Length: 135
Image (cartoon, rainbow, N blue to C red; front, side, top):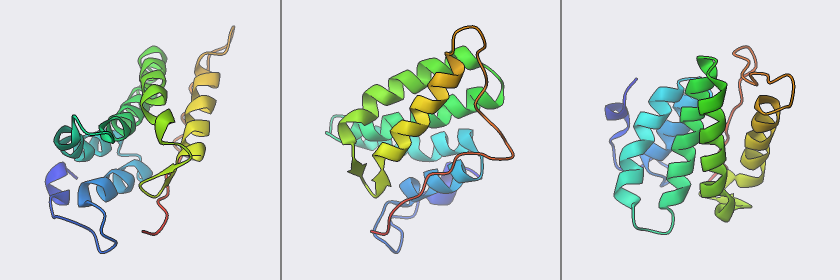
């Protein structure tokens, strides 16, 4: 899977195919591809108010790439950056339940940054999923 699979203009629900592709990749644990699919949309949106939203999603995908490789410190840094970028869009943005997403990030950070016994929150058998509400 690569970004070129999502270059069509829009999905039947009117959302950009790259945005929909991000969730498709993310929910199949293809976090690097999720980042790659969404990056062109974020680059197009730079300078606009919602650019930080897309940047935050890219950072979450990057954090999960690091978790898959058991690199907790880089994952933690990306989760923290994502929080800063995504908080302003709560409670809901672009069909995404931001409160749920922010809880996922907080839970991951809590496990990674727990004093004494940091733990990788990633479980390939029970990965997180992100769901979009119908447009």
